[in-house]
Image (cartoon, rainbow, N blue to C red; front, side):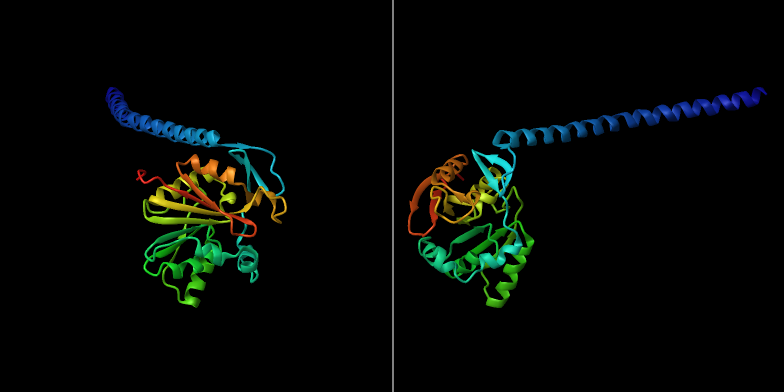
Length: 267
């Protein structure tokens, strides 16, 4: 009986020793896990706080998403099913894209980012202007980029690169772009502040952003209101990310041609 009792005591002592050794090692791990959880929660909190600082919400209108940035409701996004609209034959007569190309004043070796490239309509117009450079066609819809890739092969164009971004980031390489152009696209960005900041980061010092947006000041322009923008609105939003207003050129039938520049002292 005594031997059995001593044996049980030894086993219990061994168990207690192993338990405390395990607990001693486990506790720091639990503490690290708790700190990681707190870090994730804090990051999420600050992310939401940053978003709340720039955006507000409202009941969505017919063509909007209910998210408001600097006083304007952001519009819904044109889907890949609108390729037919983007590639329509009468686009030259309606919007004069050839005049846009003439007014961009690009060097042959320039790097141009077509932001929200869609079907690549403008990317293919831009490519011949930069034979020693390239056009980076940026979009968040892979279907659009696939369409551009197929068209590249068909037309045998070698200086267009397709580039998949996100709703918050163009993912352009820093300080590599001479000109970023957005054709009827910016008003659709669900994170315009973050997207604009990423575009500015991708520009070289002195690099330009050109906007083509349907004239929001003109009620006669036959486009849904949220798919139009005013000069005042675009300028305010560009100023918020450090861009300088350069000029407005009025040579298009129903669109603004707006030019902004990244300050030369901004790396």
